[in-house]
Length: 159
Image (cartoon, rainbow, N blue to C red):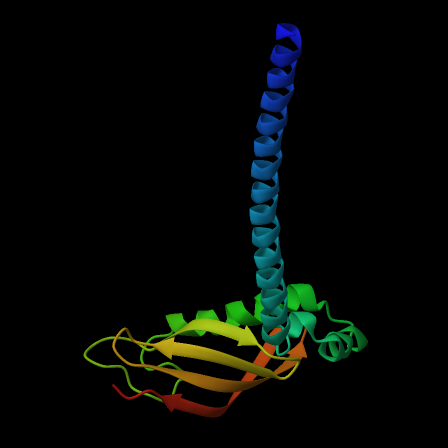
């Protein structure tokens, strides 16, 4: 009789203990599933944002890539070359040849960021540390190592 009661208590104890373990596991699984869903949503938003940002980017514009391919130019090496040509203009003495604004108090206007939109246009931001603006540049690849730039439009932000 005592053995039956003792065995029944052990079974009840194991049942309660197992139930608590299963409930805790289900709760943790629910938390992980919720976090996983949140991360999936975040990833989807990031992919959409990346798609929007890469819309106007030479690296992802197939028509612009084909334009360079038809001219037998390698766009992967051309992109850094053109950017370096623009950055080299930062080193010229006097006023910047493409930025139509004078710098303030002995400073110098120079390009900070350059983004190639397609096979013809570049957008860049510039500043002298105090004033800043943006510029739209049209470019032409005239030879293997030659690029010509033409300023289309520009703006200087007010303080």
